[in-house]
Image (cartoon, rainbow, N blue to C red; front, side, top):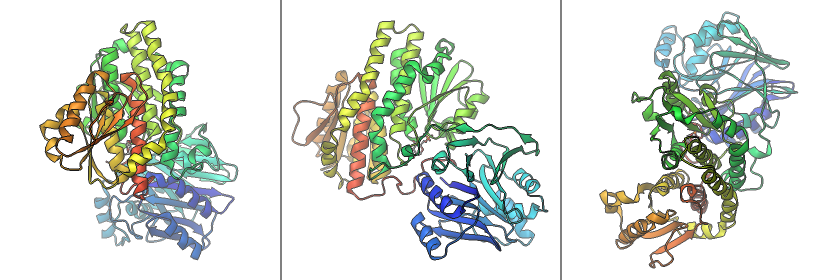
Length: 602
Ligand code: G6P
């Protein structure tokens, strides 16, 4: 979703902001813009399309200034166009604004401002903020910001410049992320850490209802009552390299390849590091049920983990899409553990689900990748996944880290509940420790998977089937494929095939059959035969794929792993499969159309 970057300092803001915008591209966008405080007013360039187009315009007519704001826009209110792009400047050219979020009462505010004779230049909700701030402005920019945000309903992360204060950049937020970066040559506001990593790893995480006032020598923080606040910067451990492609053609491939390390770090942290300490602070005997809630791939991680928790801990587990959980009046209370799973920690529905769970007195635990994110801050317990920055829109390594952490948590809970002996716990932990090596071996076979994917680009529709944990990974494999290759795809529990889906099978439909559960392998084989006899081609993916198969069938054979933990390997194979299908189609793999990495609006 929209990305914000702002700079005030000793250097020219324009190249710094452009480079920051490139680092925010992964969030998803369809237009971009930049404004600097120039000698005679704001200089603004806004451009529909990719950043290259904005860059070309800036090359043709260069801008410079020591303070500026930039924005990548993912259209919500108003089509992608130059006019609707940010920054938005008020009609009196006094105040310029970049915004991430949705102003829910914008129509009402806009109507009132129009009655006062203000003419709007765009269809966006965001322009209302600039126009409203200008009508509130009486020479005191802090007072103006306080008054204006007091009238906004909805969510916002705002970067604000006032022409009368060409040395002061202001930021304020509610329900959308903003960080403040502190470098030797100046200060930054940004939607996310990778945008500033080239300059600094010292950041403040802005909380809802806090105002940051930045000039080139430092940052001051205030409450909305204008009371000064003491905040302490944090040092981010992510390296700049981790946010660069490092020689790979796409971030997605790089991130797929990083998974053995991510798995190793995650298991290590759960055995003797911070994840262990966090798990130890929870007493599973307190809970009569566990609810996992999340969106997208993080939800699929919950679906896989449910099988493991229920099998090992014998505790009932529900998995809910956060967008459904938040509105269903969930039956939860102090004996419920609600696990929020999120890479970004900023997904709007996951945040709402978390707040609902907190309000109902449930114990909340987050499994989050982004340090300092809203979900991490507002849950009672947090365990960080150690995936590092993930840039490709389609998640890979963060998903793997979520899975591994949840498995380790299930092992720890089962042991504490007396469901596993020490020996059994250690044996399962050893199985987990063996996963990174097996993932490495699998990643050494990219040629084979690439070859297989090359033969699949012409399919109009691809179905994924599996049973038990393989069903969970079928969901994730199918999501990955449709996200980046734009091939229609659905996932089904193998047993459900005959209840409808089989009617869609015809000559040369591809069915990907996951088979990693020994005891269920014959069932999946019979599903495969049923579709093959109706003309489908079947690609088995798994360690339990049959040794002998018909000529309409082929296999990507996976290393054997404990049945419960096999998703950590099968997902890697399916990520590579999707990646190579999309690569063969020549698509924009890291930034698939219409998708955003961090979905910060409903
Ligand atoms: C978007 C991303 C997905 C991600 C989902 C949930 O749809 O494209 O990759 O799984 O949001 O995001 P979260 O940050 O909460 O894990």
